[in-house]
Every structure is written in C-alpha cells, then in structure tokens.
Length: 401
Image (cartoon, rainbow, N blue to C red; front, top):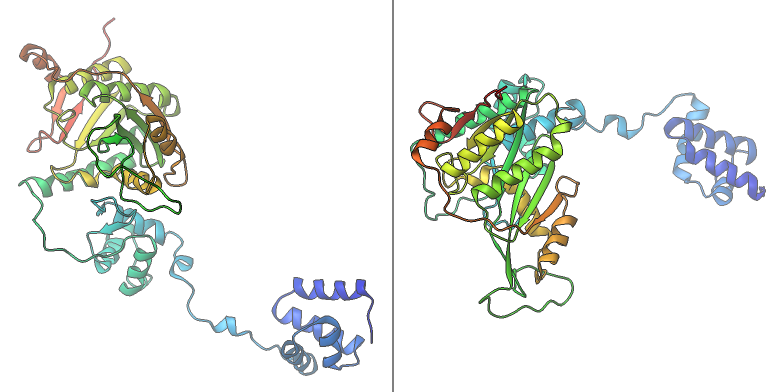
C-alpha cells in the first residue's frame, strides 16, 4: 500500500510525539489497520523500527503492556532524591577550601575528606545517615563541583602563628552570623599582584601565534587590580589602580562602592569586611583605621573588620576571582593599560561580568596619625579579646546636632 506524502508525515510526526507503550500501541494499530498486519510494509513506507513494531504487535494482541527497561534502571541520582544536596555540599566545602596558590587552575581543593563532609551534612544540615548517599558518592559529587583532592607535596611548611586555628574558628562564626543577619552585608576585599604593562610573556597558551619580549626588564606602566566581592550575591567590582594601593586608596574605593550600592541594601547597618593582614589595611595601621572610623561617621554605618591569618590570605573569597582573571587573559600580551581594562571587563565571575573602574589618582604612602589622634580613633573601636588584631568592630557615633 502506497500512502500519500501528507499521510506519511502525519503518521511519523504522531509516532515521534508519543513515547513508550502509547507509541507502540499507535504504531501497532497503524500496521493492523493500514498494512494488513504486515510489519515489513510499514517499515518500508514509514521507516519505523521493526523491533518496536514487533513488540507493539505482541502487546496489542495480548493486551499485556511490556515494562520499559528504564523503569528498572536503578536508583535515581542523589541530587534528584535530595534537591538541596549539591548546594549544601558547596556550603560546607567552601568554608574549608582554598584556591590553587599559583593561580594555574580555577579548581578548589577541600581540606576535609568526603567522610568528614558527610558527617558535617548530618551535623550542620539536618540530614540522617539513612537518607544520605555513601561516602563514595559524596566524593563523586565533590569532584563534580570542582573540590578535587591533590597530593601533598613535600615542600617548605607554611608559616603558622599560634593563633591561626583560633582565627579560622572565629572567622567561621563571624561569617555564619553575618549570613543569618539581614542587617549585615559581607564584603571580601583584596588586591591582586601588580601587573607589569608591556609585551611580556605570561606563560600562557594561545591558539594564535603570540610573540613576547625575551626579557622582562623595565615596564611601560603597572596596574594593581583591587577587588570588592559580594559572596552572597556573586557580584564582583574591580578597581584597576595605576598608582600605589594605600590605606587612603582602599577607603576611598570603599566609600565610592558604598555610595553606589547602599540604595540596594536599606536594611543593612553593618558592613563585614573580609581582608588579609596587609601593611596598608591591617587593623593597627593608623591611617587606615582613622579613615574607616571617619567612613562609619559619614555614612552612619558600623564596620566589622575580619582578617585571615598571616600567610593564609588565599582563603579570602575574592582571591578566587584572581584565578579566573588569570585564566581569562591566559596567553595574551598585556601591552597597554587599556588592554588590561578590556580583559577585566570581559571576564566572568559566576556567569556575570564584573564592574570595572580605572583609578589613575595618585596616593602618598607613609601617612600616619599622631598618638593623640589615634587615641580618639580607638575610642570607637572594639577589639575581640585574645584576637585583637584580627577582629575589630567600629561603631558609628551619632552625628552631633
């Protein structure tokens, strides 16, 4: 039997729109009614699979539905059974992870084992031992999220001060409290290493031929990226400084950033600033602390300074952004300031391009307050007992009438 082209198309489209048992029943009835039950005719006319037709014909004649093999394919994926699992894994691992210190990859490396992550899911997130997948599955899911294991190299041990563990414990408490407080906004701040502007090799790879100078002596200019990251909102702002990154530079950028964004956070009365203990922004730096106190007074907002331990600044969330930036301009020649600006604008952090601003203002170094001026500053400062240099609350004084 030869079918009209329009009929053939309708039959094919209808079969394609159906699935499983319903599809086989439609195909079997078509063979019975239009092709006198001869399967080979339907195969030639409609290009249908003969094995599907045979199975459907048997189901039609017997009235018994055959179960598809997919129904017995095994246990669903863990993230299907537990929709919040991947997010909870990321929350636990993020607090215990660091970036590759050489910025060669964007991969994060967890400091705790899959078994420990599983225990933390039960302790922190309310899962039960019965509902959670095995340790092996947890390890697979951590790998899928990018938290892979790496071998421990026998190199020089990192320097560690006696307070390091206590600082990390307090940092975890501080960040957890901030996440639970709608009036606290967490900001991660830090500078990337200075970039020499010129036709220098950055030891990357490129699909096109790129030629660089064989020596890096001298440079046309230098640029220091300084980042403001909102971890909870996955938003990055990068200030590209052509001059020195000083205490005044940092607070001026904070003032500019808050003026641009405070309208979005009307309920926020405290800014939590996550930083490393650099020389220009440490809590004993008189000019920095004095400027921060003035900032709190001007904007009538409290500031909480939280510093990562010395030699551990890579745990600061904004550090991960620099690894992404390095990957983005990998293999390129950063021969002008404009080139650096353009590359920074076209990178993506968590799928979103950062806000980028070039800062050409010149800042003087070495500015400090007198002891008398510093005494007035300290009157508005509250330091955490035992960890005074690393956790500091600066309370805004009410404006005088």
